[in-house]
View 1: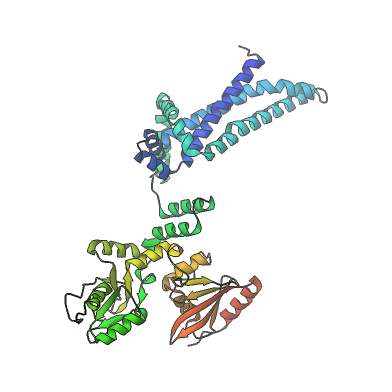
View 2 (view 1 turned 45 degrees about the horizontal axis):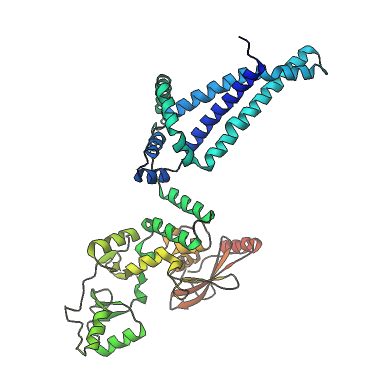
Length: 448
């Protein structure tokens, strides 16, 4: 039966719209956020559950998509060629022989139909679907499930065959809807780039996600900076320590910091002072027990200990049972919240007007990587602080003016207390200078 031109044009438009439907359905389901779908499920959205189920087991869905797309492509080629070929052939008859005009007409007709389908049935629909994937996935999920139902025999056959060949080559047939920390970090980064989060909020969220990867030593107060009382301290000694270094809690030790027996709350000391009562660190009513944690715990594990024991302070010990520092709930929160709660005086990293940075030697290496936008410091599992990085790179105990050139930055020691690095000056240097100084650093033998 010969179709007239109008009918064939209507068929072409219908095929393009059908193909566009499949293109939007395919891209929207593939691009829909699993996190967003899970949120909608918790809100009682049944369509979101259907979308997530198809994302987990996409075999039937993609079978229907491929049946529809390929069937439409074949029909579009057949109908489209008969629509456009006569016009192109008639045009080329003015310039060419009949046989050549027929060949050119067929080629131009094929090219025109292909371009129309690629543009209006594939590219534009997929761009539309990518713009709001969750919206279109929820909108089209009902019709897609209906097509899966009516094409079930074909779907079962194609899904079974595809699963068989996937198993043969060792590819999983089920797409587990797992969400990794990398997915969350990427989502947070995208939100910051879109202006939905400012830098401090982005940093706080990233810090929460990375709590599992940061050790307790990266946030603790090191032993050299801990103010503590000993059982032998007199009342005058205690007052002087409180005046010179006020804190909410103080360790109480037997002779030295490696023999911690508990802690005392400054509120209790204040109450005794206000009531003019005598004070003795030997009183058991004043002393409170304090948990001891190994220095291998992550910050998330520290929070779990605080939660279980109802404490907000703990002593950190190394493998030799020596005190390496103390950690408080406030330290963990400061690590999470970063610049949202830290003042300039509290900050480990201060950027100066000339663009350089003054960095405390105790700064966690993760904070340095984030501030300088460095992907990874060399062998950063071998040290935890900027001071450790300097010692690792120099292969010696650093002295004043010792410097390291790395990744376009110069790290220079500007303050040392005994053998402890207090301050490091970091400045960005030009590429040519970087290459020259890094080469000199490699050629120079480390001092013993």
